[in-house]
Image 1 (cartoon, rainbow, N blue to C red):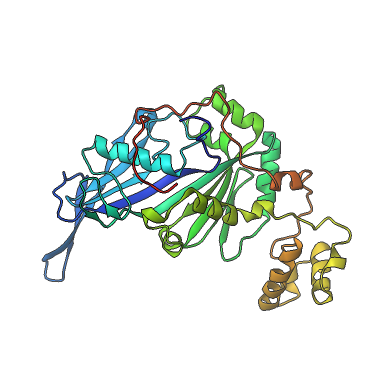
Image 2: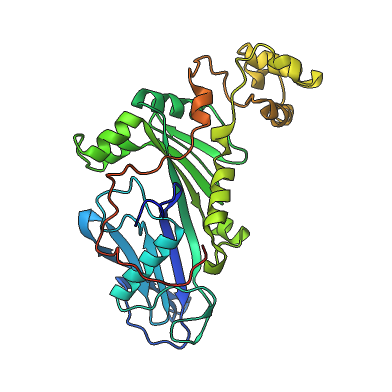
Length: 342
C-alpha cells in the first residue's frame, strides 16, 4: 500500500458475517454448543469459531457452519509485526476477503449480486474499531494528556483509568479509549530498542480508539456492509473524540463574566475547589453541569489544581501519518479488487 492511499484514521478490529443461503460450504469450527429443552431433546446447535494463527503470534477467529460464515479479529494486524498503523476501511475488507479465499470460503459482499451472480443478502457488521494516533511530543506530554483526559467526563458513559497510561469511557453502544502506545507495545513483548517503539516513545504517541458495538452500528445503519464508507467512519470518529477538542477554560480570569448569572455562583464555587455534591442535589448538579460544559467547565469532576502546560496544543492535535520507513508488508498484501464503498 502506498502512503498516498494511507489514511490517518484506520480499522483496528472487525467482526463481519454473511449468510449464503442454499450453499454447501466447508464446515470450519472448533466445536459446537448444543442447547437442550426441558425434556433433554436438542433444539439448537451453535458452532464455535476456529482460531487461525498467523506470523508474529497473531490470530483470527473464523467460523462456517455450511452457509453462515464469520470473521472476527484485528485483520489489519494479522501476520504483521505490529499495528502502530493499520489499514483503512477498503483495505481492511479486501484483506478479509483474501483471508476467506485462502480458507476456500466465499468473500464478503454488499447486498446485491455475489461473485457467482446469485442474489446475496449482504455481509453484516457487529463490531468495528476505528482508531488514530496522536503525537504529544514526548512521553511526559503523553502522560500529561492522559491525566488531563482522566479529569474529563463524557455524557452517559462510564469512565475508567489505569494511572497515567490509559483512560476509557464506555456504554452499551460504544467505547472510547486513549492510551500511551509505546507502553502498550512493551507490555505485549516489543523490545525497547525497536525503531517502532523508539519512534512512539520519542514522539509521545497516544492511541485513541472508538469501538463501535452492535447497537451503535445498527443505529447508524453501518451494520450493513454497503452502508459503510470512509466518510462516515471519519465523521463518527471526529464526533466521538470531540473531548480532544474541548478546551479547558477554567484558568481564564474572565470566564465567570461569560457565564449566565444563574449559574455563576455554582461555577465560582467549583473554581474555588468546593465539593458541589455537598451543597446541592444531584438533579441540580447535573442540570448546571450540562450548561457549564458549554463554557469549558466540567463541574462533575473534582477541580483539577494541576495545570496542563500545553493543553490547548494537545487538544488541537491531528492524527499523525506513518513515517516513510514504516512497513505494511504481510503475506496477504496482494491486491484483490472487489466492490466496496469508498
